[in-house]
Structure formats: C-alpha cells, structure tokens
Image (cartoon, rainbow, N blue to C red):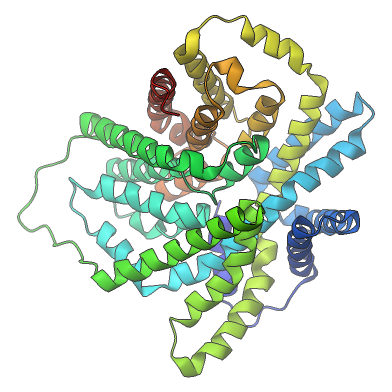
Length: 468
C-alpha cells in the first residue's frame, strides 16, 4: 500500500493532469467548510456535506483495498447501531459533518507536501540523516520522522522513504522502521496540526493547545529517550569501521530556511487561532495553500515563479482526489463512533469507572492500557476518542483537564502504531517488507506499553505536585 502523500506528490508532478469532478468536489467542500467555520450558515454546512458525500460515492471504488474493507465494516457497524434507534441517516450525516474538518486538514497537508519534497534544504537534511553511522542512525532517523511529521502528518514520514532500501539487511531495516514509526508516533504530543490533536481538542474544547504544548515537548523528549534506550539495550551498535563515510553536513542556511518555514506555519496558525477563535485545522486550511505557493516559488528564479505557481496550484487541486482513502476511512470511523456512542448509557460507564478505587496513577494507567489495547485490536483512534468523550472527565481520572488531554495526545500516536490496519503501520510494513502484524505488535507493542506506563507516571506526578 502506498501512502496517499506519495500519490499526491506523484500526481502533482504530472504536468497535464486535468481537473476531474472528484477533485473539484473535494476543493469546493474544502472552501465551503472554511467559509462555514467563519460564517456559520446552515446552507453552507448542508452543501458542503452533500459535496463530500458525492466525492465519497464517486471515489469509493478507487479506494485502496484495506481502507475500503475497513471503512465498509466500520460504516456497517455504525449504521446498524444507529438503525436500532431509527437514526441511521442522521448518523451518516453526522459522520460526514465531523469528517469535513479532516478534509480540510488532509487537503492542507497535500499543498505543503510538494514544496517539502522539492526543497533543497530538506533534501540536505535527509541526506545528513541517511549518512549517519550505525551508532547514531536510529536516533537521527527518529528525530527526522518526528520533525517532518510535526507539519506534514503522514506526508512527512513519506519524505524519509529513501532511508530504508532493499540493500539494507533485514535487521537494519527493522531497526530503521522502528525508528521512523516511534519517532513519528510522538508527534501528537505537541503538534497543533496533527490529526490526533484535531480530534482530541474538538472533543475537549475547554483545553487549549498552548496549555499543554510545553509539557508535550518534554513528554516527547522523555518517550524518545525511552525508545532510543530500548533500542540500545536490545540492539547494541556494531563495531565502528575505519572506512565509514563521513555524514553529510547541513549548512546553517539550510537549517535557517527549514526552521523559518515551519516557524512561519506554526506562528500564523497560533495567531489566527488565538486572534479569531477559529479551530486549528481551519487556520491551517487558510494558511497552507498560500504558504505552499510562496515556499515553492522561492525555489525558482524570479522570472519562473509566476508560471510555476500557477502550474503548481492547478496540479495541487487536480491531485486532491487521491486523498480518497483517508476521507472514506475517517467518514466511516466517525459514523461508527457516533452510532456506537448512541447505544451506550454514559452514566452507567461513568458509575462503573467511578467505583474503581485505583488512585490517580492507577486510573491513568488503566486509560493508557485500554487505549493501546483498543488500537492493537484495530479500533480506529477516532472511534476510541468519540467513545471516551461520552463519559471520560478529568474528575473521573482525578486529574486536571490539561493532564487528561496531554495523556490522550501522547496515546494517540502510540495506539496508532499498535494498530495493524493504521496507515503508519501499513506504510512501514511496505517499506521494510515485514508483515503488518509484526510491525504493530512485535515492534511497537513493547515500546507503546512501556510508554503508557511513563505517561501515567508523568501525569500522576504533575497532578501530585500541582504543576498542571
């Protein structure tokens, strides 16, 4: 299974691809979703939903096999659950409505992925990571996957696809695959534009990103140290040979340009969110296309920029139809989550959990174990968060809202890494030529459950000392 980020990039590299009806439907729904977020009108909301439904109907048969099967199963369960309450159509409509924000998010990332792949500065950084010696390659690759994932979601990890090749021995492919997956899994700890952050902050809007971001950075550093330590413990580096090539050096200007792009992206998003009150994905939807145009234009001579920008915008819109797998799967997951949540009595679950006298640390550990196990059996994280949002409160866990949200942010990526059907696991499986069950359970399981223990311990410590 190739990632949609790669497909989008390949499509945008084709010079003469015409605009298709699905791409235009996607782009129109993208625009209307942003307009409806700024000017809440029922007509805009309904029209955007119908456009997105038309996109799904037209593109479903072209969806990749695993997302197609999973989405059909999730959709059937959700509609069956809703049918018991005679609200099947309302459930589907709600699932579509909830997914439109991800339509904007994925479309925004598609714009940014193209200049990111073409950027000489990012190419230089990738070469630097690739030429690291055996003792440092795991750490550098994990940090690179984390850094690129901050802004580009799964498109970021696809930029590192050249790091793993058939020329590497199986043992090295496994180590590099784990480095990429585990470094990428920690992105939700503090990235405001990652899909997990969008879902979780929408479920608990009383918590703001700036409240948890500093702690998320610290937590990501702690968990990455754990990942690196486990690798060092079970996979000691081989002896260094004298003829090892020197790592490629990255110029200060390349670091400055890369940091400037990412800093500009985050700064504009934060300013828009804090200044106007719009949500993070809507802010990203407004910022990403013009920033991508400026970024890509800067890669060309002044005389070429106008023509290059026009061609890039045309091809970027034409390639939007290739995000079909994410849209179909997220719509199905939202539909199932809403349907299942409707048949459970949240008061009964709250009462049951409230009777458990585990203490703060024990409750956070139970949360981590439950979340990760849901992921391991293939339950989509969107479904887990929708179900949790029906009954999970900070008071139930004995923590502040910020600690609860921080824990869920960290668990999002770890749970995704344990799901054999997640896009990340399937991508790493394809790169390393390993079974997806092996990648999810054997490679990521020990680290994810160990990280869950650390998350619970940190949350309990912050609560105990009143630091958060």
